Length: 98
Image (cartoon, rainbow, N blue to C red; front, side, top):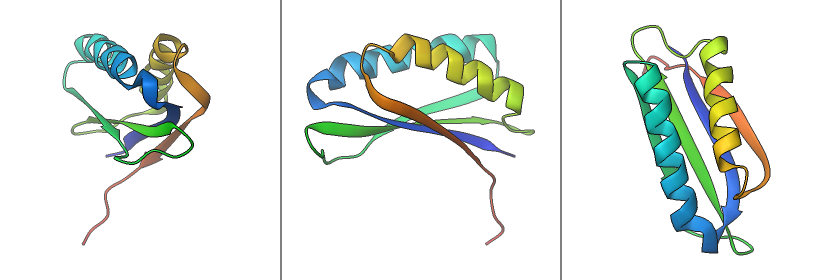
């Protein structure tokens, strides 16, 4: 089951606005894709007055396919464009046996 991780940087001063925009956009994507789980994380420290943010998406039992990954990335990138500094990086990961 592939999960999607998207990370990027934004100004510390924009944290509240960015968080609200991400959560609203994630709710919209989740309503269009039943069962999609979305999370938002942020590094606790800042560097050069910027935070690093991480969006995580999972969909059981099959995971995030390329089509869904592109849809999520397109919708969130458009919604967050006013606050993102630099590129958004999207990567897929699969669980490992431990």
